Amino acid sequence: MSTTDRVSDLPVWQGFLRPILEVMSDRRTRSRRELVADVLAHMQLTPEQLGEQVASGGNRAEGRCGWALSDLLRAELVDRPRRATYQVTDDGITFLAEHPGDISDADLKLIPAYQAYTPSTPTDRPRLAVVHESTAEPLEQINEGVARLHDEVKTDLIKRLRE
Image (cartoon, rainbow, N blue to C red):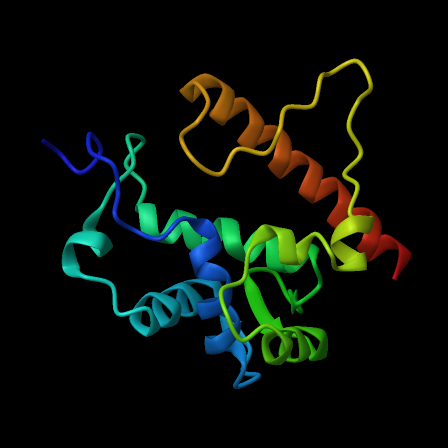
């Protein structure tokens, strides 16, 4: 059985929220590559977990770290001062201190910035629920992922233009 055929024992994307904030709590600005490497080392994943690949060939742990980072950006707990560079915000430090246990998407949904994030989507296109795990058909996951990336780029551009 290959690593893409079995159920992963890797934490789901929410399991990466706390480690990202813990690693970034030193307030250093990191490139995406450096951040992912630091988070994966901090989590002390096994070689098997680090080697897991998804069907498309990407690394499963890096992908899940990316999903978590994306939601932390939406919640404005992490900032992107330059393209592909990340830094924790003061709100991120406070949030980490106020949430000593596991952090979930339900915790993020309580944050006003996360609630205020409303990507602009054409009204004629039905909006699928965000899929973080393999609960939908692969084509649905791909389409949703592309739509989500487009929405994030639109929202980020609008935010930067307003600034």
